[in-house]
Image (cartoon, rainbow, N blue to C red; front, top):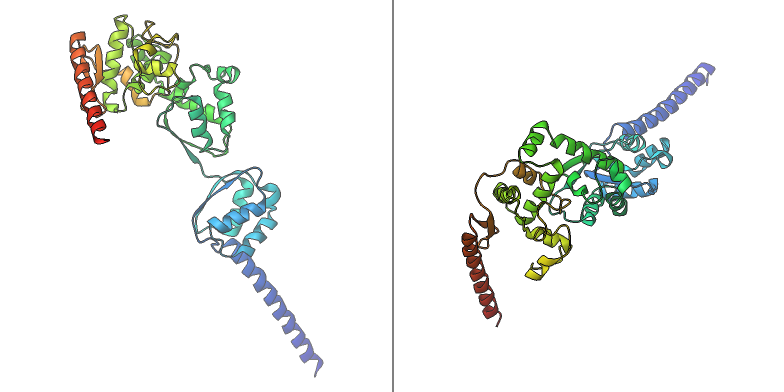
Length: 350
């Protein structure tokens, strides 16, 4: 074989090898950087103690990794094991291997909805609500809610901290610290208390804290939000007349909400929160009132009602009265219906 032919064959062989290597490298690059590698949308939670191997397992189980080797290569290339950031990461099926690796290394989190709603009558309940939705543990939140020094920075105390919390949905990073969560709560509290609301509170002769206290009592009386302004009007009428509020929810608070029914003996409990014994508002809110309750106190129905009791319809609504004699009539109607229902229930169980 002639020398020129040999050289040509050698060059072609080298070119073929280079083309093969180049094709292999380009193929890997394309697979790792351009080709979607997941079959399912997935929300990945990465805790500080997790390893890269555990994250890979989680992705394989939840996101349906199509090419595991591609993901492993990208994890190795960016040293995800050493550089991974804790967080809540949302993947869709269009994500590539390199994007997910970068997402974890650079901490490209997707915000989490922190939902504070429903009945919140204890600090333990609040701590649990937060800890089940965020990375912080309930003990840390509970400790903050009981810390004089910590809450002092926000202008609150362990006794009146319910007023700081406004039920709502807050978008935050899942990794937010206790301080960052309370910073957000304070920011929303300050935003709620506009000059207009402050003016309305002043018109009712109440401070912001007193509005929260009154609203917590209203919240404890009914689950029907359309009744908030009417019940707020009743308590404001009593308050402005210098009457005792005689609010059953404050008695329930005195017993840590453990009573099935409030009886006359319970009304003698020795507590500054007992509004059957003490004139005026209790020292602090007895629960976390909804924003609608706060606004009901600021914008109460104007009426002459002083009394109200549960409706005999047993639909969660109330009957209202101006005079005590009217109130007794309503109360007797409710009691008759209650007695009749108990008898019917007893007869049915025989």
